[in-house]
Length: 119
Length: 111
Image (cartoon, helix red, strand yellow):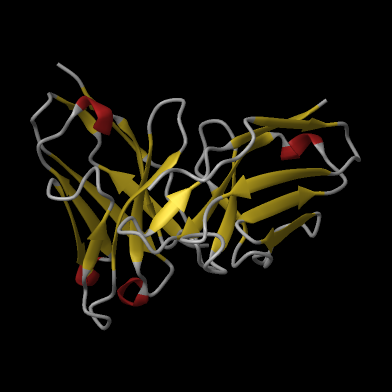
């Protein structure tokens, strides 16, 4: 069974930074386009961003609310997806999920990691 | 990019069928066949139920079916069961700078 395990969440002050990690197992990670999706408490799902495979250029795309503040990267040697979050705002408070896809047949999700931005 | 519009809640009795709608625009649902549906139980991660409008992943019950007409996609759950009680979200690829958009979510209650 495919497994995705996020870590790195926690409490951070507005303006601070946090780096999330997602370790993926039982799939060929280097061949997977990966996305981050978040869910604010009691709210719906929101796509955060995506990274393509290195074969497809390794390029990234971001949702407007996080563009310029968040950076997605990948370490294929460690089957690991990263989300660097800078200049955090209170509205970034959410559970952050990593996923292998939002509209594809192979859509597997991690259990999520909670990020709380508060003074 | 605004979220896709779903009814806040839908309910039905065991054994009945229910349908959840998901309305977007020609820039998302109407323009592409990349519509998915997710089921989410409280405190759990979303689970893919339907992809590319009407396809079921392996392991998903055939009681779940999807369709699309114009800018609106639909998820039908037939033979409703207690375990189907959950939140359901649609999603679509979009031609806007935000590549993927989710629906507002629908809470399904089994009476």
